Structures are given as structure tokens and as C-alpha cells.
Length: 495
Image (cartoon, rainbow, N blue to C red; front, side):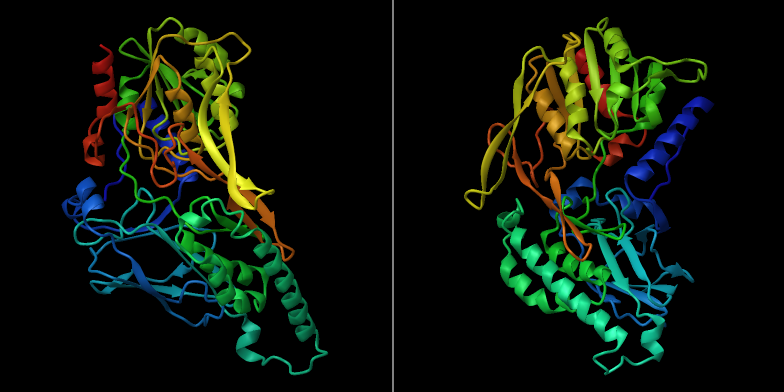
């Protein structure tokens, strides 16, 4: 695997370093990566991802969700269902175990990680991420990112046996927790699975699974243990929009799968002229070969509050998005780059898209839970409205899209597809939309549950399928090693 390299002028290196820091915050941080020959890691590519079956974790020590792990355990063992490359990627977390030595492949399918554990502590580990693929099989096909969660026994459990006295404080506490868990389990069953928008699409008998898991959920000693047991059940959904929060900790049921990015920011910034950067470098505007350019890297803040400052000029007070759009009116062609944008608040996406329409348009269909019927059958159509500022860009628009695009950014792509003078260019989006809604249980566990099924206007489900571009330009990650080939192709198309 490669480390990110920067080149060019000093200012370019600084902005790229800052962008890299932001992307690490948006996604996940690598804590250690086992390295092997780059050629061996690269041989899989897009073909391998589509043709060869990817590896799976068949067992771990400790097991996922085990809340009685011996703190004296000295190594974590991960076993796969097929032969693996001698590399590994484990992602950082607040609850990462203390690693005491170099991980070792015991054989081609088994990795051992030496650790030191402590009593009464929750531990979390993530194997691989959407962009870091250390765990890959011999064909170069990566393991889909997956969590390992477990908890060690408290120190008291190792030395002091539980009291048999029913009046003891510990037994009263356990009894109270059991009652609370029973209540929480009943609350959970009231909305799950009937209000889970994708329940019927997973091919699972959720009620049977709940019945099997009831005892261990009810008998959980803490709300964290309840959450671990519940996430063990729910992870069968493999849904990136379904997760659990408890005491400030988040447990996910699904991860973003390995992504072949179709962007090279290093090269792009060497092409960009008259650079202006928005707050926290989440947006960049300028021009490339006489074509207007703006990149939005996340719908995480209201773009109407952004201040775009001239890159390298600390004294520049900056201009607003309105001023940026007025400047773009001088360009007959505009590139809107959302290839690095994996979503956020759809309202912010709508605010930006409103600069490109003069009349309201319908852009997406969603199907939600219907309280009257008790089914997922309430149909709603989303609409986009023009802004009230009279700012509407009327030139040719090229929206750059790709595999990183998901969630509310997929909605943005659908908005732009309804604009006559806009074309979406690049590759199909990731395919993940859920609008998760929080459901708080009495024991302090909050379940975030996807509340809709999202569809394109022609009836295609977005979940697991993605949104097709108007003009498809298929690329692989290798195509972007030296340049941003998509920018090159789009500029050629414009000229």
C-alpha cells in the first residue's frame, strides 16, 4: 500500500496536508498497517473486486460481543475463510487495545495481535476501511470493513464471587437492570422490524432472531452490554445507516465497503487557478483552463455561511458563496466536483443546488413507514426550489460523481440530474440512503433506524445500487496515481 505523496509548491503541500487531515476526520484513522510488495497489493484492481469472492472473518478470539473476556488474554486472533496476503490494516479508535508487539501471521489464514488488556474495559477494533485494504486475499480482493467489539470482565469478577443473598445491593442492582432491559426490549420490538425501512429487503426473519436473542439481551448486566448484544443481532443487516449509541459510544451494523476512488487532489490543485478556499477547506473554488470549478467535500455545514478566501492571502476578508456564484456567471462552463463528498445534511445540498434552477423540480422518491397501515408504503416525492436571491447559473454544468458519493450527496446528484443544462459525469455512486431516526430505549441505548427507502424518479432503488451518471467514464484507482484523469477527460469534452 502506498503512503500519500505531495509535490509542487510549498503552498500546495500545505493545503493537501490540511485536506488529508480533514479526510482522516471524515473517515477513519489508520493505527497500523502491515506492508507488503506494492505490486502484489495492486494486482486485484476493479476486476478482482467484481470477479473473485472477497475474504470473510470466520472467527475471532475474543468473539464479537463477548462481555466476559479474561483481561489476562495476551493476544487477539483473527481467522479468515481463505488464504490472505501477509498484510493487515486495523483502524484506530478511542477504545483500541494496547498492542505489545508486531502482529504475526500464524498461517495464511490466521493473524495474531499481541495485546495487553485491562479489567472492565470496552475494546473496539476495525479491520480495513473503505480506503485502506491491508486485509486482502491472494487475488488482491479486500476484506469488507468489519468491527470487532468485546468487553473484559471487571476486576471484582475475577476475585469476588457473586453474593447468593437476594437482599444484597449487587443482586438488587442486577434485578433492576433486568427489569429495565425487559422494558427496553419491549420498546425495541414496538418499532423493530416494522419501522425499519429495509427490513423486508434483507431476507431475514427478524422476529425469529429477536426471540433467539431475548434472554441474553434481558440478562445484560449493563446498558453497554445490552448494546453489544443488540448490535450483534443487528449487524446481520450490514446497513451503514443503522447504528446504536450508548454513553457516547457508537456501534455500527455496517461499514462503507472498499472504494476505488476516482479523484487525485494532488494533481487537481496543480491545475487550479485563482484558488479560493472555504471554511475548513471543505470547499474550493477557482478555474481550470477557462472553466469555472468548485468542489464541495461534504454537506456538513451551511454553505451560505462559508467564507471563501484567496489561497495564501491571510489578510483577505473573503467572499460569500453568493459572490462566488456571481463570479461564475462570467464562465460558459462550470465543473461542480462532489467526488469526495459522502453526504451530510441534505438541506445544505439543497441550498447549493438552488443556485442552478429557475423553477421547482421533483428529484427523488422515498417510501416511509405508514402509521395507518403499519407498512413501509407511504410515498413522498422530494422537491427542489430556486433560491430567493435571483442567483441562477445558466451555463453548462458538469457534475463530477463517483463511488465515494453516497447518502445526501446522492440526493444532490439526483437534484442536478433534473437540471437541463447539467450533466453528471464519472462513475456510479456508492448506493446508500436511509435517513436514520433515533429511538431511545429506557436503559439509555439509542437505536438509529433507517426510516425510508430512496428511489430515483424512474423507480430504481438507490440502496445497494447507486445513481448512474449521465456520461459514464469508467476508471480505476490506478488511473489516478499520477493525474486526475477525469478532470482531463471532462476538460477535453468541454473544449
